[in-house]
Image 1 (cartoon, one colour):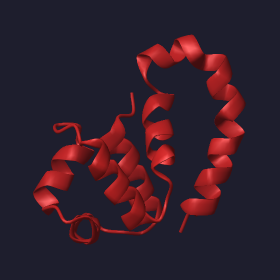
Image 2: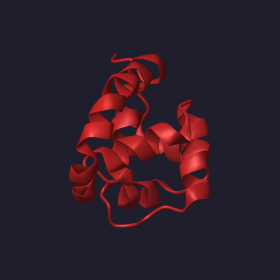
Image 3: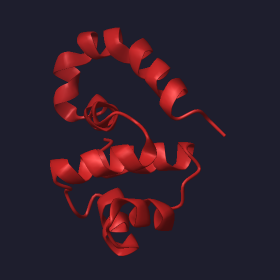
Image 4: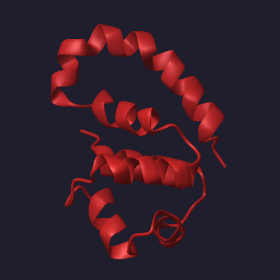
Length: 98
């Protein structure tokens, strides 16, 4: 199951940004960012917004990536499949593979 931290890490690595760089851009310590990425700390919404600006992606993309694999997501599998192509396009646009 992907959580918000894993979603942030996925986008960060796709953007070629180190943890240290993202932490600096986001105004947090690398230790805190590491805890978030490992799912040991749940970030506030304002942190998600700050990180999204630092990565130049919409905050909704982080949230969509996080909820895509959520256990309750099975209930919403059909709608999630419908937005899968849009999500893929967002990833290609905002987080192109290096």
